[in-house]
Amino acid sequence: MKLLLDQNISHKLVNKLSKVYPNSKHVYELNLHTASDIEVWNYARNSKFTIVTQDSDFNDFGIILGYPPKVIWLRTGNTTTGNVERILKENKDLIRSFGKDKKTGVLYLL
Image (cartoon, rainbow, N blue to C red; front, side, top):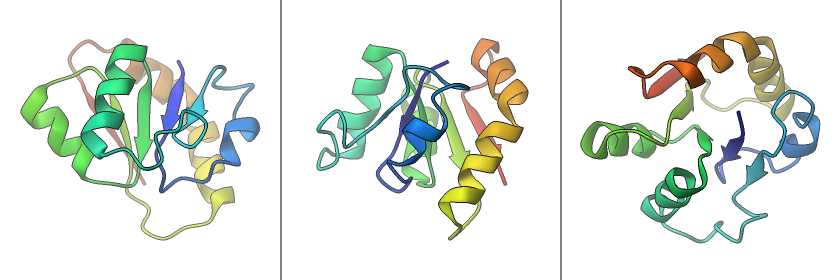
């Protein structure tokens, strides 16, 4: 599963997560850092990424537009990059199962 990290997630995580989530990208790498959320959504859908965000807007798009792309919504509030890394690594099995689940479009992680 390849992740697309939203602008509210540190770009440094792409390298730190590369063994667990190969081919993942950050919106900055794809020149999407100034794009609207709907443009990021469409890019993720067309390129088969799962969006990782702390932004509720992507959850709203899923409700309105349906999935894909799938969304991992980090409901952590302000937290460290290290904590986000830990959450994504510790939940790798859950995230992989979520990626295969045809009925679920958003995964909430605390």
